[in-house]
Each structure stands twice: as C-alpha cells, then as structure tokens.
Image 1 (cartoon, helix red, strand yellow):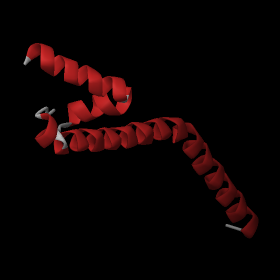
Image 2 (spheres, helix red, strand yellow):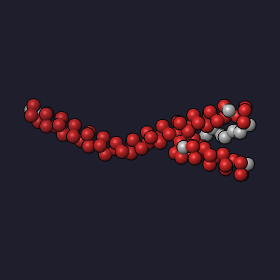
Image 3 (cartoon, one colour):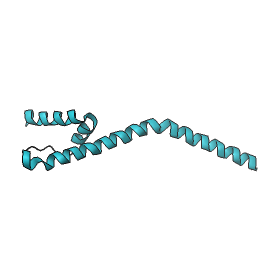
Amino acid sequence: MGLTEKIALGMLCAFVVLGVIQLFSAPLKLALKVLLNTLLGFAALFLLNLASGLTGFTLGLNLFNALIVGILGVPGLVLLALLKLVFI
C-alpha cells in the first residue's frame, strides 16, 4: 500500500467519523440536556426536602420526580406538590 492510498484511506476514515458525529450530535445534545435538567430537578427536590423542617412538606427524592421537575421546571414542582396534597 503506497503513501497515496494510505492518505486516501485516512481521509475516508476521517469523513466517516465526522459523518457519524454529525449524525448523532442532535440526539446526544438532547440526552445531555435531559440529564442536566434531571440533575437540576434532583437539586430542587433536595432543597425542598431540606426546608421540610420549616414547612412540614416533603416530596420523594426519586428519578420520576426529578424527571418531572427537570423537564417541566417550577410548574412540574408545583404539579407534584398539588398531586401530593390532593391524593395523599
């Protein structure tokens, strides 16, 4: 295999790798955004549970609640609080 063929093969591999990165970049960005929002939801629920000594109100610190709060934000936190007040 000559030098020209090695260079052509290297360029082909580079284009394939860039194409795959471009193809999967949007789903990866969405997954990272959902993960970040979920972590922020955990933080919001943790802070709410820290204040439970003053308020007497707690919500479970679990993945489902964190996803709801992470995706919906403050309205999600209010929704979970209302659901707890109505059904429990």
